[in-house]
Length: 70
Image (cartoon, rainbow, N blue to C red; front, side, top):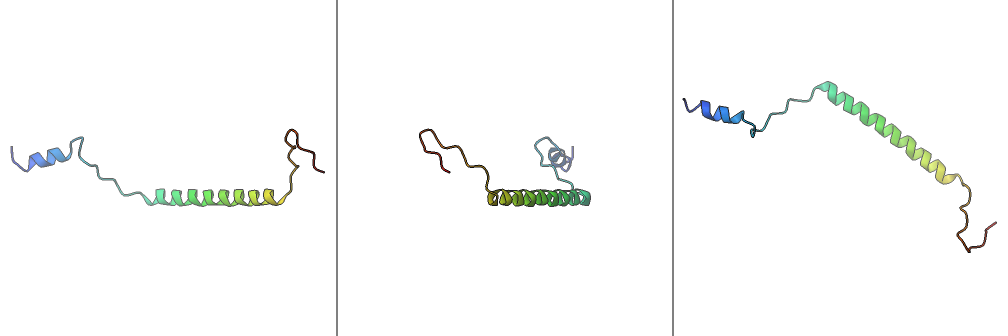
């Protein structure tokens, strides 16, 4: 058995690190689209929360023993 074959055979064993194929451009574009959609959703949620903070809601019920406020 030539010595050149032994290291190559070991390199393909279960403990050998596997080379990752380069990510296709389609995957990168899909991730960019998903990030843009997520950012738009976050912006909409932020706007909704800001609107809710500015709009006075019903007063919370007083705790037991506290007088009611007008």
